Amino acid sequence: MGRTYDRLVKVSGRSATSGQDIRRRWSAPLRPRNYRAAFNSLRVYAQPVDGLRRYALGQGQFPHDLSLRTPLGRVTVHLPHAHDMRTVNEVFCRGDYGRDAPAVVLDIGANIGVSALYFLTRRPDAVVHCVEPHPGNLAVLRANLAPFSDRVQIHPQAVAPTAGRAEFVADPVGRYSGLADFTPRESGEVIVVPTRAIDEVVSTVAGQCGRIELLKVDTEGSEPALLRAMGSESRAVIDSVVWEDEGHVRRERWTR
Image (tube, one colour):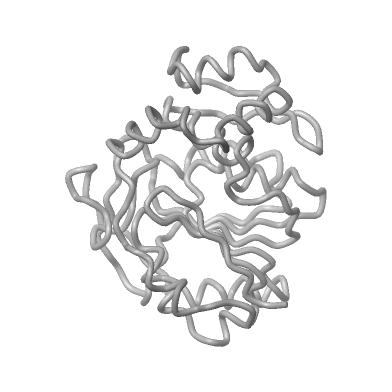
């Protein structure tokens, strides 16, 4: 394995809250990567002025259907909330999940499908497995990825270190939802959802696809626990991992 696994699993488990999201927005002008994102948005958004206005100034009505330019042509993503505009910027413009074009992606914490849409439009043969438990997110996820239904599988469960059932904080926006053991309960309604063990999910996808070129994990706080729970057999079939850590994106190459 080409990685320092101990460093990977010892990251903090605290989740990003909407308050942190606001603070990052105000500090955005201090970050060079956001200037690059603004430049990239000119070619990503089909209507750049409107896209920048919605993201940078928080203007415009939502829900909103946003048109994006991709290597496979224009696609439309339905955004229920203004917060979802931030996700589009992070993924499509800022490149938080990299600029590669993996053929097989396991997307744990798929939300409304923005990251899955990004990977699906990098190459015409990309396959994405989306795992998402939030009922509201699932409906939008299915609608957003419907044009790619032949290359997408949606798994409507939460992922945990072990299988069973667990309390899940479903916040109204959907962006800040996660397992109650790792996410502040005051951020949303607590519901009970079925969980699949991380090793079981990896084994299922690898069994269908052979290997997983990219594992993406964004679960609002449980990322370290999930990575720590993975066995050696699961890690051996994954090429790279990208995960959220307190608003920052970490990447590791796991196989060479």
